[in-house]
Length: 117
Figure (cartoon, rainbow, N blue to C red):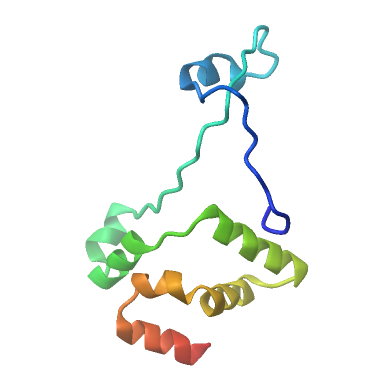
């Protein structure tokens, strides 16, 4: 989706989660009603055994890290166009989104990231 400019489609009705569960999300529902799509949420989860032993700086990073779908879509389009690996995609993200990731890491970590790029 990051390759082309996308716009949200107005379905003319608000999202109705009861209707979504009752019919919109059911294949071959006999009486569908107009409905918008729900927004998805993405969460970072950490297993308790890991969290109990993890360096607090790692957990702090995971709690702060966040980006928009637009950011991910643009990066995925770049990776597709360039047949890039995950590592190459990560470097591309870090090079072009410093304003985002600077808030996730300590100044010392930021210096190390910049030096590695």
